[in-house]
Length: 256
Ligand SMILES: C[S@@+](CC[C@H](N)C(=O)[O-])C[C@H]1O[C@@H](n2cnc3c(N)ncnc32)[C@H](O)[C@@H]1O
Image (cartoon, rainbow, N blue to C red; front, side, top):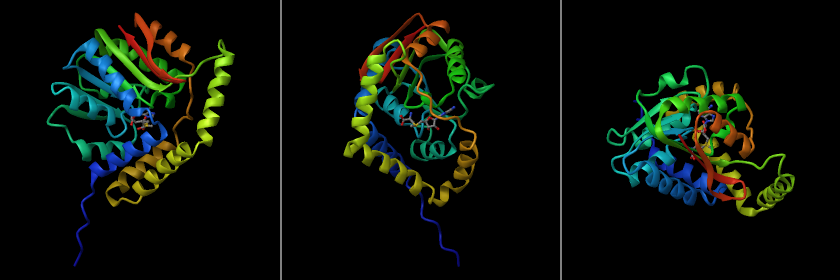
């Protein structure tokens, strides 16, 4: 007789994702909140939104909960987080779709549902892209967003060589965080999350693909804020500016 495998609690996996991300970034919910306020103030309460590097859908979920007529497309390249997001949130009563695509890679926009978007958003994700891929994504947003459409990027956006004293300040603050008990606990939670998820039988196939893709993944690259601003302006965004920040943790806003 074979014993049935217990059902995977996808919602619990999403909850644990949020917990480990919040322990690495204590201001995460405030940052989400600011991004939603800016969305509402610019493109209204029923936007069509692209969530770039969505992970298991934390930001999409907050948008869909706050704006009952909003629709989101969550894009990520990691089959593990996509599986968890799909299991936990499904299609959110037809308002959420999931796309497996590598941002900036040739043809990535062909995988998206057609039509223009009111907004593109992203959190803690775009620093994984190479500078060339990031510039490509910004150029592609020009064609994906409607006129007056907006882009919001919540991420570490660093000071650059033109501000050496601020660069050193940010480095010192990072050292303080790294030595802080909470921050160390945050990395522990991140590692435990991945170690425990790797043991979930329902994720075995996704993990095999995750490992295959990870082998080709570029290293994290923190581009200076000024490089993001420059690339966005070159891609046709007329208004570009920081709307929130704690040291280098910022929300960059851009409007077509
Ligand atoms: C730290 S997670 C953040 C997820 C989510 N935005 C959040 O705030 O919880 C970074 C995400 O970016 C995704 N990512 C990194 N590079 C990517 C790429 N080139 N294309 C698509 N997704 C990518 C990773 O797979 C991961 O899910």
